[in-house]
Amino acid sequence: MRSIDLSADFVVIGGGLAGMSAAVAAAREGVKTILVQDRSVPGGNASSEIRMWISGAHGEDRRETGIVEEIQLENIAKNPERNLSLWDSVLYTILQREHENLTVLYDTVCLEASMDGSRITAVKAYCSPAQTWYTISAPLFSDCSGDSALAVLAGAERRYGREARSEFGESIAPEAADRKTMGMSCLIQAQETNTPHDFTPPEWANKYTDDSMFGLRDPHVSKLSNFWWIELGGEQDALHDTGELRHELLKIAFGTWDYLKNHPDNRERYRNWALVWIGFVPGKRESYRCVGDHIMNQNDVSSGGKFPDTVAFGGWTMDDHYPAGFAAPDVEPTIFHPAPSPFGIPYRCLYSVNIDNLFFAGRNISVTHTAMSSTRVMGTCSLLGQAVGTAASLAHRYGITPREVGQKHLKELQNMLMRDDCFLPGFRYQVPEVTARAALTASTGDPAGLRGGMNRSIDGVDESWRGGAGDFVQYSWLDTVDLQEVRLVFDSDLNHREKNITALRFLDTPNLQIPSTLVRKFRLEMQTPDGAWKEIGVYDNYQRLRRIPVSGKALAVKFTILATGSGNAERIFAFDVR
Image 1 (spheres, rainbow, N blue to C red):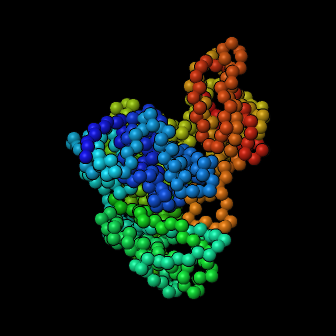
Image 2 (tube, rainbow, N blue to C red):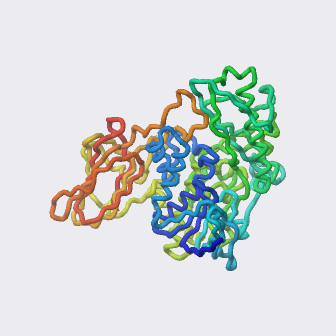
Image 3 (cartoon, rainbow, N blue to C red):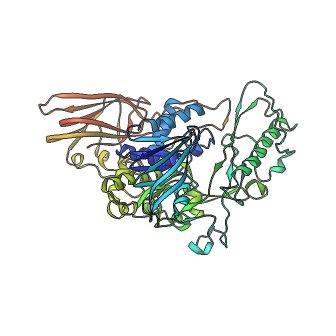
């Protein structure tokens, strides 16, 4: 047994997509960050241990961008067959690339919090494989653990269960408050093959004899199923009863597959299907929710979340699962209450009302049960994490609290998020002054929208510039400028809905493909003070956002398309320089 003392500028507890995004966003801003992850792999519910695909906002051009889109495009490029080990490696690599400012402690559980009044001064965490205790001190912390592990230890104000309808005037809330939540699930993965496969269930698996035993749940294989309805726990303790609930879920999962493979009515239909995996780590939907300066509720969601301090957006329906889950087979497993897409989520929901230096992101933000039924999906959670990591960088830079970031530097925070391709409904990115005052020309079309701050097409408004191979855009100045960065936002097709992983792989399930709408190769050049043109670089591309460091004095900067994925002219949403 050993003990190690560590210090950082920012500590993130929980390595799901929210925690990953928070840690990466902060590290990219130069903040020394430690991410404490209690599992061997990052990703949380998205990891190979649980295997829930990333879901997010509904509707045309609503797909989440920023770090979550970067991750998914990386997966398309590196893992087109959606191998789960390679998916883990994609997530691992996204973290590893920030190693100069980011340290990740895997298999490490946060167990204690040291306090100085209303501030956390350090956390104590234990890594079982290394038999090591860590004491980690920092001025800023974020609880992205889902279950609010750090918030509980620090005494942060929090909520559990469903609010009474009268408290916030929520029409879909129960009449009386209770301790019920949405449950947890153990998912199934299977594959169709060209040969028969037998299956023998464990002796403890449940036995199902006909479809009626599943009630309103359809047990059969379909292309968009991952058996999410194998769900229990909403009427028990979502934390302390996890072990017992896992066993009950596994009994259902193995029993369901036994029914599909071995019941006489199903045997021929599923003769060539093979069980690939059953999850032994339950995927959780709900437990503690932290309390911030604002508690977002159903009415905030339904009205579109038009907050002045919007830092993220949602757009999933209010998908409120019945607490009893599979234990109530004759009750609909969930009700998809409508929600607008997008709706804004305010910064005031992302930091603690009573712990001065605590952020939170993910399914445990400051929302009611009904609002959380929409904001809990992983595409949204990643946006929340990126907002928190970016806010932490401002808190670190200015030596202030999370609350003071919103009070003093809100516009700067919002602009930083939009610079990093996070869409904020109702807001536009303000391009750098050096971009705004430059002369802008193009080989074809009108490029004015490239510095208009939209960064995507939305609700029929499209300010993009279209170009094909050989087309260029150029900024020019009367006097030389010192360049630091070129920023480009390409079109990654925000309507493509392929899942990052496949739960049920059919014989005709296609591999992932890099969106054809992307510019695949481009060149950057700068005109030096003596009037000569110098090549900055030629770049292959499969990403939507490219921020390319540039160093030197210039009279002009030119971006030239060399190849598109389709071979035709494609959209570019932003081109600016800093």
